[in-house]
Image (cartoon, rainbow, N blue to C red; front, side, top):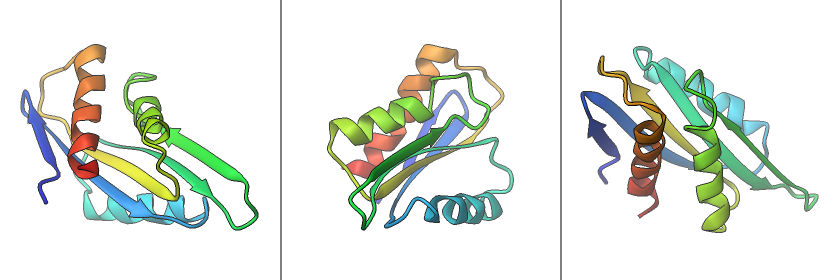
Length: 116
């Protein structure tokens, strides 16, 4: 499965993992930070319905401009009714600023690669 989306020298790698509790998010992100030490941003969103029936969700732009990564990823999970998953996009900055609009589309394009 190809999880690489590349634009203007920036590389976006998408991942999706099953989760049963929101406490798993921190461990998954820490593991990806170790695996991708040279990545500039690791943005994510998750939706999890825990055993008590409560639905939790969260997101992170990881220092990208507000609303360009985490929120669109979370909205994508909600629109597709995906639960008990964390959707992550790891960005390696290529030296060219993309601007907010193109950045947002790049995160969504990358995420859609892994959701197909």
